[in-house]
Image (cartoon, rainbow, N blue to C red; front, side, top):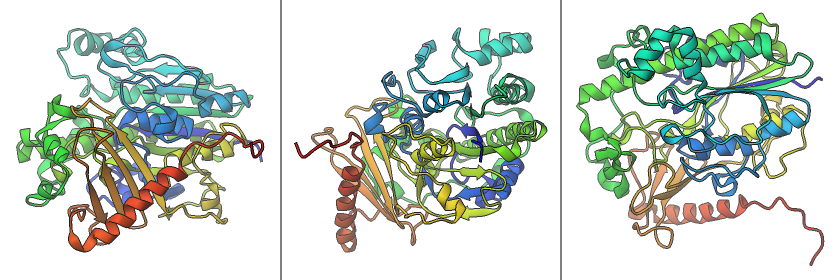
Length: 477
């Protein structure tokens, strides 16, 4: 079989349940639902971190954050790190990217350093907000909608999040992807193209047509119970009061009605992306590429969205923060309409892409090829997933470090103390079979101390099991 094309479509900050196909009856995602019906959906996919850069670093290198070194937002990836797209390029693929990359700091207009990434087409724009000569979205907006560019970017008189769809960042991502599929790809090679949407990342605002799809008051309220945070680590009360280590408003700053409006806007952003993904998939069909292309849809991490009385992201390891959508379609190879419930990780995608391309490269990649799962072959179920947070967003004082392991239906989150940080050592323990919404922390429950110790020991074993030991042993000494 010839090597397939790879089309990776990723959003930013999309929860696992922000998808109709995942059983959410309140959100409108017909194109993604159809993609799920045409392929296989993985219902338990976890990212390697709860924030952008460490998670994206894991996808591109196939390694856990403590190994690839991109431990926080605002950190530059070590330029010596090898990326899977570079490997594919060296082995004959035509690679391209449109949108966010975030393997380096792009704060306050800084241009994210270009790596040896293998991309022949590189249409970078970290976000729609910050002006930068390298922001390709702004360059496109200036060419195609000069009046809107001046209003939204230059004069800041208009919200760039709520621009009409034809001028929106999400439309630009779709346009760049369609341009690649229809015109600029090298037709003599298989391709790997990454379309990195920014939505449904905050700020919480969408074009009016999509916002009008939702009645905020009819949407479900955030998942929480009275005094929930009293039994949880103190950092969560801090995050409930102010997000991002005090740099942004917290859940407590909003009325109940305002939180519902945030949820409605978030859903609207997802629906906008859904429609643009639909346009990309139409282009795949129009170009006759569907049979030869693996299409993957996923997201880099989730969003609290008011659950547990918190917003945005940070050290939180709830499922709404680290569990993401994952859909894989490849007609004739990936079963249509299937749902796999095995615990899988984002680094498994790296290994899956390399295996699909027939590559033996990237020896330090730590994930596993997912293809045996959909081919019905033997696949030893890992049975656990690992996510790491190392003060990875806005810096806290003292720093916050958390490590999450889910094993079967149990989840443990270690909130590390000395010598890692001067914060008190504490944690979380959840029985997801009995408490799937993670409302009841069993960490200090006397009857669960044996389970807590067992899970902490298992977490230590996972950390050892996932150490980087790719270098070959040559001899006993």
